[in-house]
Amino acid sequence: MIEIQNVRKSFGSLEVLKGIDLTVHKGEVVTIIGGSGSGKSTLLTCINGLEPIASGRIVVDGIDVHGKGTNLDALRSKIGIVFQQWNAFPHYTGLENVMLAPRKVLGLTRQAAEEIALKHLTAVGLADKLTVYPTRLSGGQQQRMAIARALAMSPEYMLFDEVTSALDPMLVGEVLDTLRMLASQGMTMICVTHEMKFAREVSDRVAFFHRGVMAEIAPPDALFGAPREPETRAFLAATH
Amino acid sequence: MFNYSFRWNQALAALPQMLDGARVTLGIALQSMAIGLVLAVVLTLCRRSGNWFAAAIATGWVEIARNTPGLFQIYMAHFGLGAFGIHLSPFTALLSGIAFNNAGYLAENFRGALTAIPETQTRAARSLGLSGGQTFQLIVLPQMLRIAFLPTTNQMVWAILMTSLGVTVGMNADLAGVTQELNARSFRTFEFFAIAAVIYYLITKAVTLAARLVAWRLFIY
Ligand SMILES: Nc1ncnc2c1ncn2[C@@H]1O[C@H](COP(=O)(O)OP(=O)(O)OP(=O)(O)O)[C@@H](O)[C@H]1O
Ligand SMILES: [Mg+2]
Image (cartoon, rainbow over all chains, first blue to last red; front, side, top):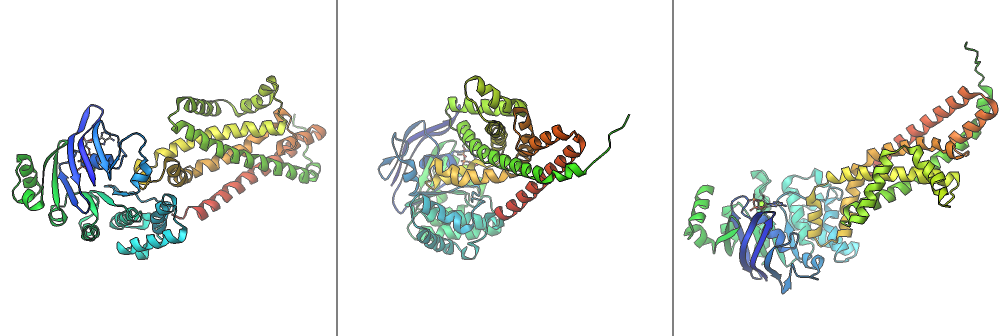
């Protein structure tokens, strides 16, 4: 369970998160939608402790992420995150990218790590790209590789930050299919996305962010069908 | 007015001796690069450490190495340390001086290379649970060394040429030292130094070529 309690966060004098409350239960898929700069990416990087917070608490499986003495490396190994920008390690092949963390963080043998990497690369349709360096992969393939890399750690949670936004439309489908597959397998997920159709289809709940505030959260039918807040209505009208 | 007659026989007869000197020169250059690379990584870590004391020492090192003559750095290793009762042999003084210089220049090259590695690489690595140390060693360092490879090759050439400053601290086993002694005995100045120049040229060309081969084998991505 991820519990976000009254989280505030600023960059300099700019308050980016203004008291966010959100609880995500095991097996739940929550998508976050909202305008550019509303704090969506920032919230994700706070959840895995990449960014500090000013006040409030984020608790993952009972562990206070920003608490003193929290072993962040251990915590992060069970929270997978895939970013907006592609971030394959250019000096490792597809297989090596995925094997790295299982070997170095989980301490698996080369053989065991390779088996796991192979399984996840196959699941995302990259079984034929094992020895290829990321520069030779398309954007969609790099993004699926990044998903396989995160999944190879057997995370209990997956955070996705607009994983399709840097892709051309032809490639969006293949990455969304991968996310759908994960959702259907019961993975607990928080997905920041601009793909409204996708959000409607896979989410248990959809959260709308507006200027650092979670203006509204509801099941997809309610949020898309009958938004309560005027900001939500305006945002949805603009994106259609 | 021009009454110097060229006589090459004597100089050519000394070629084996000069080639021995060349081997010593290459040896010093290679050792100074190995030491310099390790020190440059340490300096880079110091500058990134967030510890102001370590960062200040590293920055001071880089500043002195890059903004004072190499000759001065070798003199300091020999005569400067001598004033504090630390007496280095000409070989050790020369090696230390060049390694000091290499470390400074390489550290500066590394700093430039680091700015070319996107912050997202570190974020992605830390997100997978890799520690800060693992992230540097496995993700940042290999990419940094690749980006800095060409300037590193240049520094190697520079190190080879700097070894000739050893004559000023009494180094007599390297190519410049051997040549200087032969010259002092025979006064065939032009011949000896011309041959030495050709040998220096061939060494640096060979090293540049070897570096290119290494890069081609190493950087397949
Ligand atoms: N490292 C940073 N330093 C300073 N300001 C930042 C930093 N990261 C984000 N910001 C600012 O914080 C605000 C929220 O950024 P964030 O990336 O969370 O928005 P977002 O909702 O993900 O937007 P988008 O849909 O464009 O990705 C923005 O105004 C952004 O400029
Ligand atoms: Mg964002």
